[in-house]
Each structure stands twice: as C-alpha cells, then as structure tokens.
Image 1 (cartoon, one colour):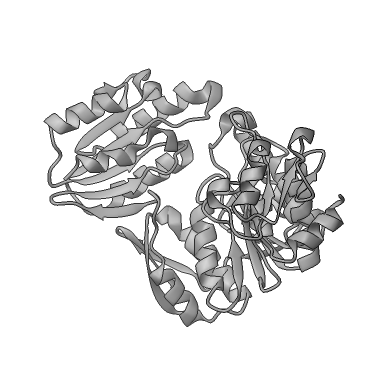
Image 2 (image 1 turned 30 degrees about the vertical axis):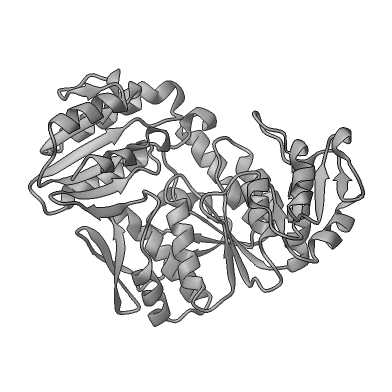
Length: 418
C-alpha cells in the first residue's frame, strides 16, 4: 500500500498512535521499533484496543486485512507526515536552538492561540519521531503549526526540515549543547543553521534576535524579521518585566536570558495580527512547569528549580542571573552536564571557576564530572552523597538555585529542602 492510500485511511480520523497504552479508537497504529522494543509484537493488541489499522514491517505480524505491511514503519510515518503537511498547506513555524526551545515554543503557542487555531509540539517531542507525530496531530482546522526541532548532530535539522517544510523559522541561540555529537561549538552553529539553509533555499522567512551576532550573520541572505523595535527590557528581579508597544508586561519567567524568548513571542504574535493586549494577557498568564525555571516557595527557603536540562551556556546564564537577584543568602546546587564529549572536564572546570568567583553563600557540585574537577568547594560524587549531607545539614532561609542535566534528576532534592 502506498502513502496516498495510507493517507486516505488516516485522513478519515486524523489519529496516529505508537503506544498501545494510549490507543485511541479508530487510530492508525504505527509499530515502531527501538533498541529494547519491537512494536510489531503489539499490532494485534492495538487492534483489540480499538485501532482501525496497524502498520507493521515484519511479515509474521501481517495478520489480516487490518494490518498494513510496509518496508519500514518509521520511514512510512515520516513520509505520511510530510504528505499530510503538503495536503493541509498549513503555515508552519520551525523552531530550534541550543537553549530555550520548549519555553519559546510554549510562549509563541500561548500568544498565537489568542487569535488562531494552533497545533504545537507537545512537550519536547522534537526528534525524527516527534516531529512527524506533531505534524500528524494537525487537522484541517489548524491555522498555524509550531514545530520544535531538536538535534544532537549535524544534518538532523536538515532532515527534520525536509519533513515539516517550515514557512518561517527561528533559532533561539547557538550554545554549548550536545558538543559531543556536533563536534564542538562550530559544529553546533553549522548544525542549527541548517534551518536557515532550508528557509533561504525555499525563499521563506526567518525571525531573528538582532542582538545575536551569529543569527544576523548566518541569516544575511534570507528575508528576516527582527524583534519588534518597540520591545524594551525593564528588569528581572527575579521575573522578567518588559515593555512592548508601550505596554508593560510582567511575566512569570525568571532570568534576563528569558527576555529573548518572550521578545520573539511578542514579535511573532504581532506579525500574525494578535493584539498587544492579547499578547500581554497570554504572556502574563503563562506559568512554566516541568522543572523549567520554576520558583517554588518552601517553609524557609525559596527555590529556583531549573533541572530540566543544562549545558555550559545555559548554566552560565542561570548563574549570572542568580547573582543579580536581591537576596543576601544565596545557595547554588549544580549537577553534571552531559553530552559534552572530550571537552567535558574542561567545561565543568570552567563552571566551577566561574561559580566560585561569584561569592554565593553556599555551593554544592554533584556528579561524576564535577567530582573530577579541582575546587575550593566540597564535591559530591553521587546524588546520594549530596542528599545525605543536606539531610544532616539542612538549608534554611536561603534562595536556592538548582540546575543540572535531566539525567541528574535534581528535582528529587525538593523532598528534603524545606
């Protein structure tokens, strides 16, 4: 069965699922494979649970006329998503960058949803599976799609662009993320700029931060829309406050580094004819969650929890912002940064050196990478080591920054910090 025929089936309900634990009635089940699972084995289960058809790529699971045998399930999913994207002719905004992708996507979604029917990437489903699933979650009612694209090596953004074919694009920044896969910061710039390459080739439009020299340089041959000229940063102590079209917006996001994320949401909202008052309402009502720059008030401590992810660029930005917060008693708890390859020890040492110069009240560094550095501060090799110390030496009356890579799961500290 070819893609056009599969599309006829899909377009009756616009439903696609890949997990039998979340099967919806009349959905199209794609039996994806992974290192530790084989979705083909669950095709019959998906049909039992209400799937209309199951797409498989192993003959032994081609059970009846409700199973569709293809050469490769993942490639079929990707081709179907691209076919659907072209059938819908929906406006697509492609989004990538080293830091702040998901927050930026959610801010743009909140703003555009005030006027338009929006479909955006759920969570951080931004890879070779997540992007097709995002596209296939769109329906003819979708006016604008926001597609977040993640990458940890070159040519990945290029491939994701070939699937979602964005009309507009925005790169949040070029930072020290996934250095191992990209092969250094120059590789990061080259890899993320694949979005610019696609937009230029197809005569499409890129939004840019005019204060980011790399964005300006890499987009010089493309039609660009810079941040709205009326935008003005006011303060971030701790929440970002700004002026847009002479209206003051008080966000629930901490850190000056979040200003650009808010600024692009204002710029894109204005471009797509969302009123200034609606933009203000959307941004002031947006509250971050999922361990992203959350402020959590405990009995005696105030916590800034930024434990969703970390790399040298975002770590330094968080520390610089934390230093500006008006509080005498400030504690920093930092966990390892991952996927830095050969530069890992150097990057962790630089964060140690940078942090120790800022003169915070208390410093805690945890993880095998930090443990290998040279420091004037006690280092903790494991989370359990740090946990034991904090249980026996509880923090009180502090503002506390907690930041580390997702694999460190530093949000677990919330259970013992009061």
